[in-house]
Image (tube, rainbow over the protein chains, first blue to last red):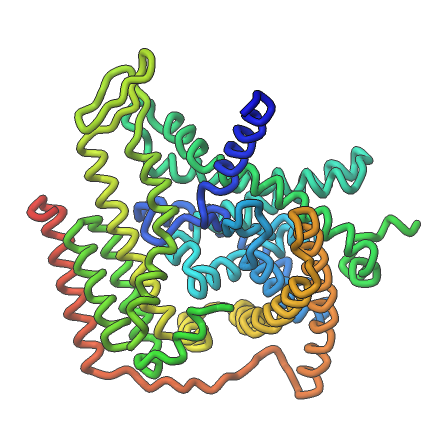
Length: 250
Length: 260
């Protein structure tokens, strides 16, 4: 082998390792039974204000227009379905997107928090991703923190008059990364390291999940971008009814 | 698509009162987490396997494959708990790297094993619920527990529409495969996102049609479903009580330091 061939083989090996190391990575749901009792309760309590806010916002929307109920139900089923389908990955390993970034951009973060907890409950029962006692922790990372950050970034980019394509990509990708950081932090808080405490433990958890989660975040950003582009081309009326492309027309 | 949902309709325990199954699951998981002992975990794992495979008649091979689903998460994150980077070596193992050691202590290795077993036992309890109880029954239990009507209504509709959307998605994926939609990575990313966007459009159209259909059938904010499950039986309740009692004793013994 000459030098160039060696380089190609080396790069290919690194890429395969990065993308193929974990055959199943379902966007970092913390498993049932993995968190100590007090942390299950703690994260559950933290989620409550967000859930109540989401509940009232949904109820207000419903009182204005009862038709929103079926729309929300469809949105929930949609988020579940896209998060349960395998996304294409180079090595044929099986990974899923979170779908909450897309949900937050389309339906708003407060609605996604309620839909998120329902979707996570279904994922726990129907797919064994996550669990009942870790529902609070998973809800906080996936249905509260991720979507709110995605939505915030999307709004910020809009204000800065950034290209919409860039802002969609950033919102979905960073929202996914943020979810993964929060999960690592939750695990670290529950299991501090013997040498170095919580901070060292957080670095370790970030490290072991990085090979699967970082490429996944980029892929999620790309896919979300392609989806929004396709929707803008084919589904203008639907997007208008959600209020997604209002200011385009004036 | 959703294997667990299919299997639970074949379970021999399907018609057992869902409240009983829910109570059993909650007791098992809570005691597993509180006691975090090897003995409790093995006990719960054994009882769940007997109930799900032995009495519920779910195939043992399937059950084993399903128990392997969470294993990757467990192994990776437990690795992060056990392995440390330190200046001084610990007692279980130590690999020198430069001036540092990749190392771990015996107590943390034992802690890791305990954690994995506890999590597996808790997952098996969750499987007991989901492999033997159809989702509408679980929703009935939630309604009994005074979950707001708005939420239980949303859950019912979401559950129904998961299957409608999944069917559309699977059909589109098959059509794409038949037309070389996954011939290289670029194309497969493109096809995947095209599929999702069509799915979104269909979902929006269906949601309008669904509301019209429900309203023309006098929908007033409540969907009533006939529950097929039987009432609670004294024999079952006694069994759950006994199970809870054993777990309580095991937990106390563990807290006193009498068992692992």
